[in-house]
Length: 412
Image 1 (cartoon, rainbow, N blue to C red):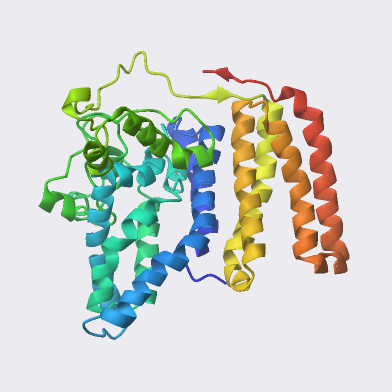
Image 2: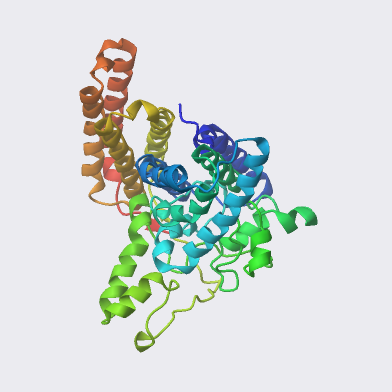
């Protein structure tokens, strides 16, 4: 079983999301939409699944530096863990800050900011590519001698801490706490698209880094959430590549290769002066602003919700048992692709894409075929094989019954 605390905490995440839904009902806060929340979690699913492959390189690199180039060896202890946790948050601050200030890095981190809502499901909206650009920031910890297992532990708990601050249910906390730690109020500022709030409050657990390095901003009026160019899609794969696509389009308009290179590492929105210069974020008119929200038919929403619960159960089994696939790369890759295809199919249903019927049919064929080919021993278990057959045939009948309802939804 995986020892990653962020995976072990998956049941707790969903319990807290359920509690927040109840709390928001009593508080008359409308911050959840089915399509948005499922897309948030879909991005987390694709992040965890892709991370199962990327960790070989990111953690592998850290381990390589630790084993070959560390200056000293630090003995593992409670004090070591505490120091490592603080050190990790310091380097997280800089990795996070650069993810906002470097165009290429923003391509990874922008995924986390795309939702126009602010609730606990947004905490699960994680990027599949961000770690490619940021894992290098933690190399000093390897050089100093913090063991790779310590890094995995503190990074997991750092991410766990950040889960609860993605809420509007908590206003302000005691002043001493707000002065030291990241809080819902501080992090609402960080997720805002209001010009005065952009690129503020980068700390993970501690807000003191922002106070020290000049990036702190107190919450004043409640923010408008999202990014300056809305994603306008429920597709988690597109969410991960949209900014890179925009970068390629911009780079084609830049004639000089030297400026193209500068563009990659400049602040998001930068263009050479001869192309108009920096495109500053703009404030929006709250009275005319409308969130992206395509309304699928209720029968489609019901179908996606039930299929999504099944997908989450399957994904949890996949993540909890990653070590069993250590020497079975084909099985691991096929299962990962099925999970990602499923998330794309569900997003496409919310958008009413015409091609989604073929994708869903492919998914319903691929699931039993892959499982029977890769794990033929399923047939030895009568209950398991019968359950799989019932699920596939039942889902197929249900899908074809609602197929005509999957049309272009209306915009809110």
